[in-house]
Length: 186
Image (cartoon, rainbow, N blue to C red; front, side, top):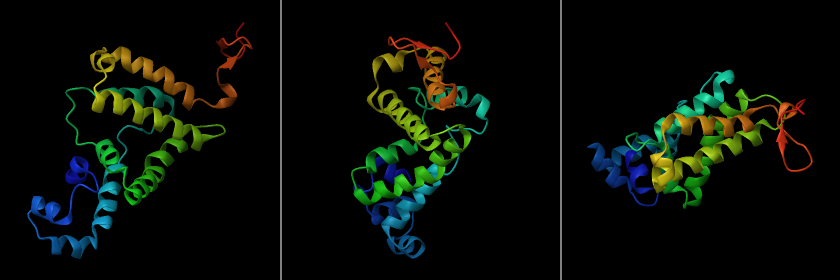
C-alpha cells in the first residue's frame, strides 16, 4: 500500500514494490497474479476497516467530524488511503477498483447508518465533503483549515455533516425567502 500511496498506480511497478518488500517480483506475481490484483488487494485493505465512519448513528456527525479533523491535522502521520486514492485516480482501471471498494465498504457502511430516503445519495454527498476537506486540509494545506482550532473546526464540520445525515423528512426547510428554519419553528 505504501508504494501505491506514495507514487500512485501508474508511478510504481511490481519490481519496485517487491524490492521494497524484500521479495522478488516473481513471488509478488505468484501470490497476487498481477499489479492490478495487488493494487485491488491494497485498496481492499485500505478501505475495509472503519476509520472515519463509525458505528453509532446517534453520534455519527460528531464522530466523523472529530475523526476527520484528527486524521487531517498537520501533525497526523497516517499513511492514508486518501493518498492512495488521489494519486491513483488518473488511471481508469485503478479508479474503478477504488470506486468499487469505497462503495462496498465506507459508502455502504455510511448509507446503512442513515435513515430516511436517499441514503446512498446522502452518503455519496458526505463522502464528497470528506474527500474535499481531506484534500484542502491535508494535501493542499489551506491556511485557514490548517490553523483553525481543532474543536471549533470539528463543531463546524459536525453541523454540515448533520444536514447530510439527518432524515430528509426532518431536514431544515426554506421559509420561501431564502432563510432556513427547522420544521415547526416560526
